[in-house]
Length: 86
Image (tube, rainbow, N blue to C red; front, side, top):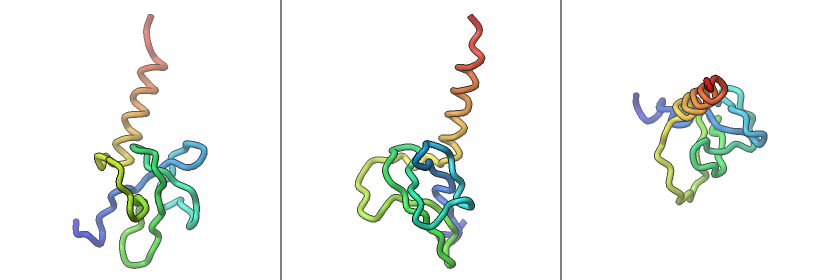
């Protein structure tokens, strides 16, 4: 996958902590990194593939775990927590 089509963050969290795919993002919406919780910008241009990104100048530490991977971990944790056998 080349740089112009690579999608690093195709999913983010919104202000109500709901998952949002980039295809459902609004320009100017408030989105957050599912890993570090810092503010994301939705990149919805015409040249590169649509994606979420940290704002320019971001200096935090993020492992780059994809939003889908993070979502899968949260869903599995929820499932196992909900279905505990006592």
